[in-house]
Amino acid sequence: MLFKKIRIWIFPIVLIMGCLVSQPLSGQIPIEQLLKLKGYPLPVHPTEKDSNIIYFPMSFGSAEFAPEVFKTKLPNASDVYAVHLVYTRYRQVDTFNQPKLNEARFKNLQIIFPEVFFEKSAIWRVFEQTRPKTQKEAEGYYHGFVIYLKPKTDKIAVKLEIDRMDKVIKSYRDTNVFVPEKIIWKVKKRREETGYYLPRNKNQKRAGKRYTSPGLVFREKEYRMVKDSIPGKRIPAHRETIGLFDTFGFRHTNEYRLLTTKEWPGKIAVVADVTASMTPYNTQVMLWLKFAKKPLENGRFIFFNDGNNSPDALKSIGNSGGLHIAESNNFDSVYQTMRRAIAAGQGGDIPENNIEAILAAQKKWTDIDSFLMIADNRAPVKDLINLKNVKKPVNIILCGWVDYMAINDSYIQIAAKTKGKIYTSAGIFDDFTKLKINESIEFNGEEYMYSKAGLTKINRIRN
Image 1 (cartoon, rainbow, N blue to C red):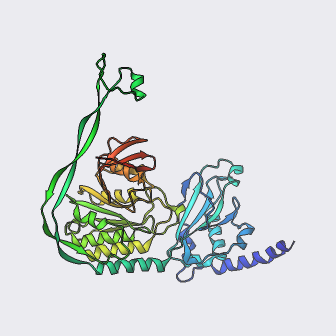
Image 2 (cartoon, rainbow, N blue to C red):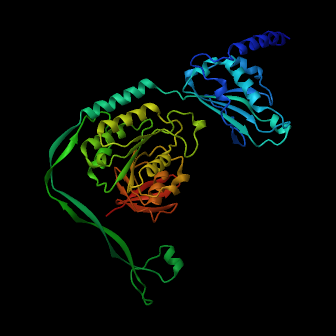
Image 3 (cartoon, rainbow, N blue to C red):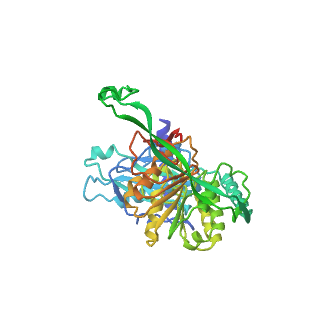
């Protein structure tokens, strides 16, 4: 009874306020402008529960909010990332005026949440649900507004990370050092007799039965493969220029050395993950650009942050966004682009949009020979379904990996299908043609097991 009395007072007030807001104030988004948005068709609009999603439901064919809306705590308008108006395409009668109903819905939202109409960064969208074919079906679907909030980011922490990068990069200096002679050993395989003989019977052979003599049946000798380390390439002692910098906070990372000691022939596009936790590695990417001239001469860089802090619910495969492009031969210009990418977003859900960034680079720079991806081993790739569209080799600097971890299968698939290589602190992984699930394979003198999780070292191969 009390609620009915309250509603008797609310609706005249709402009507009066609706008249007051019919003329947009300065800086306010006009409802007439929102009515020009074309309804995007989709079977059903998602309505999952999330702390960053607020629902303002309405009934089918109605502009009135459900009673619970008036109890909802409104967010700060500056925290709103997107506003969706959701309804069904089904019409009770052909003469039904959907734009008029939408106008009434926008006006009622303006009454209870006027601040959002002043928020210029908010993205407005209109969605028509196409699955309902009868009025009864339509009444069971969601109608009303869906408010998506920006994920919370620690701006102070992001600033500290960028300040830390600045400090390390400013500490860089070229230094001439003496490098002693180095011998690169090669592993050579040879067959060696074990001193035993194999049984003729296959079952006995499988059971491990062995003989010390050939016997009257002339048993075959048993052999085993032995690996010997022999001197290979000899690099004479010499002096060389290296880059020195403040390594505080960058222990147990060697991306700088990987980048500066390898040849990256041809025209390459550098594609780097700059989401949270990648700062130490990307700092070394920038130090590499200070040391080496060729990557800057190529002048092709894309830094991706998986969406510029957009809510995870609004990300879709191939369209997560957050790509920051630097097409420049100037170090400061490239570095500023990386800084902006880091400040604009720190990711969100763990899988990243690596392939989206690769395809953007491929479309923009059609003359490149290969990609050099700076990737996080701890983050799988969300858009592997689009890997088939990558036409050039993808070489991967794998960050955050140590030899007791599995090499993430996402990056094995990328390297294998594009004929690229994976560079790690343990060496180069470059022959993926023999990989089969649950079988072992040798890389860099170590034995690895391949599973759905990726490559995991299982045993050191003895010489």
